[in-house]
Image (cartoon, rainbow, N blue to C red; front, top):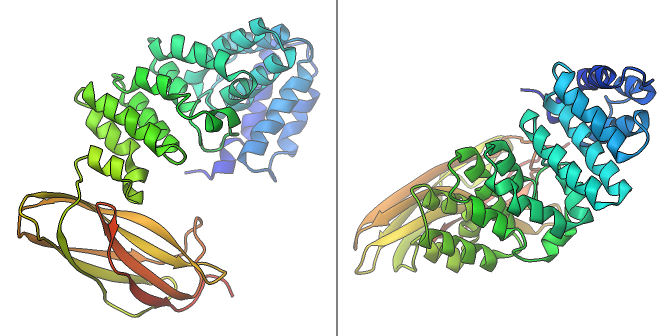
Length: 371
């Protein structure tokens, strides 16, 4: 599997140049021809920006000129697909915003929808959302969510996500709680799992800042659900469940329970960097009715400044009869990974059940991944 930065490569730049030459044979394409020599040192989004700016430089003029060129490439150029679509759609959105009129804006939305099946227009639409959120959402809700094309319906949800990976943020989405909920309301029962998965991820994004809005939306969906809704809601509420949000837990049937928890107990007190620690916890339902339990565990990592930060991991979901006892066990690795830096010192593990954290069991991480 290629590294993220390799998704837009020298070959991508060369393919884009050939496609645009097919659509605009008289254009010099100086910037696009130079791009392959400039692309290697750049991270992924900057590579997309480099090709976007090169396309804008090589096809000067108004929005209509660029849109006509892109449509010709779409219809006539072989292999006008894949990761080159990101910079192309970004150029379309950028030029439309620069033009400043509603006709260009609306046509750009239509052109992005026609291209999204060739990769995705989810990154480019952010430019239009930042420029005029309400106008863009009018097209998204009023048109895209009802499209016969699943790629367009997914674009409606994915492109408006508050924290879409690799993309620029849309401040107005973050500042207006629930502004994108109508998009999700229209799609949560979509026939395509591809679309529903995007809806769940969008809902999970929203939960970072507006948990009560998310729980309210999910409750409405469960009141008018189909065979896929409960699974979608579980996916969409996954972060809130890890955080122990009472409303999310209650909605999924994880009510407060009377429990006896013994542990977690660790198999070692000192863990070398790259090693692992195994823990076990015993959980007994001490109440007089069945208890449905969301069981997670939290690793409290030592930070560089000596403090700690917790990371929650999923363990299991169980229903215990009155008096029933189970043991849960897990081995947690401290092998090097690119997304976390470990620091030597005291760490801890705790178990979290229906949002309630157990006592912490401490251990020493003996060394770090740096000299």
